Length: 492
Image (cartoon, rainbow, N blue to C red; front, side):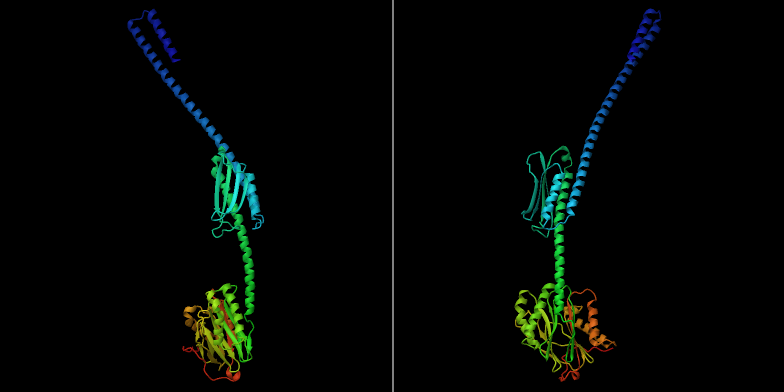
């Protein structure tokens, strides 16, 4: 357009210049004006063309970008559609897995349930070519394996391998160390883009299989625990039946027991057996250790004591024969037994005592409240040829003799003397208090209350012997009881 105007002006100028009789100065000015106009038209046309080219280039660039954006949007839409499909598939798999998982699962059905789970996954994941699940040991031995589909080693499939630990403590055919999964899926553009998501699916499958196995294990252990609790409860009832519950009365003497095991069953043994019309044997023993092994030994002691009492009535002889009888088996199991044997002589109204590493008894009467000196040897099962000594205690006045295991002592074996004196002080103060209850009943109530204080750490067994004075029990000797050389407790 501009160049046409410039050409038109040039034509007009030439016509005027030729035809008119214009002065030379006017013609020169006109020529200059026409030249300037033409130059301006040229420059203007050139710039306009450059602008048009730049505009067209920008439009082309924008069109290219728009095309790329549309292609990317279309690709993202396809990806979102694929992710939505995977999400739906995941939900279907989750529903199918939950339905199988909540079914009745135990060791007899665990393989069948695992197969059903594999079938559900193989049917829901359409790209699956092959699926294999195996239960393996630490060394790689296969306990159980299921396979779906057929393995394909061509390049058209991708391989996924995963493994999870089922249990660090177990490695059996029922509870393997590992569960391994091998899967092959058909390759396409979308599967390659969502490979990590596909792998998470198979990890979920492994978690489901591991959960089924652990569930079977827990239910099996729960069943075994209930059965064990039932059996231990039965063992406790049987052991409790073997401990004397009723009060024992013989001429001039009464006896009661307090027995509290720390677990279902205990390793303490407390008993009294009438040997004949004259002699009655009282025994308190403590087996090393706790629980079922110690309770087995406690039952064995009961049988052994009754066998020895068929031919022996002297307490030191009873301990020696029991040690010879039990030593070999105690040595094999690295166990030992502390024991105190008291034989009551009804004719002479006296107690004959022998001790094998056991806490010394407490003697409480109106005039004396002391730890009774009772020499003795080591516990049964520690020395094959151990010997024991006998102490005689004439019962010249009314009083209480307490035989017990060290579970009653708060401070334990290392400070038995101080603990024994603490217990003795409590009992002395208790017996000096005015009370309508009888002496035996007050001591028994105190002991039961003491067993409920704090957390029990050991079996507790106590044998309470209440005796009358010699004048009420027939002939007696006048010797004083052999007492430990400790200061007598002062009465308040």
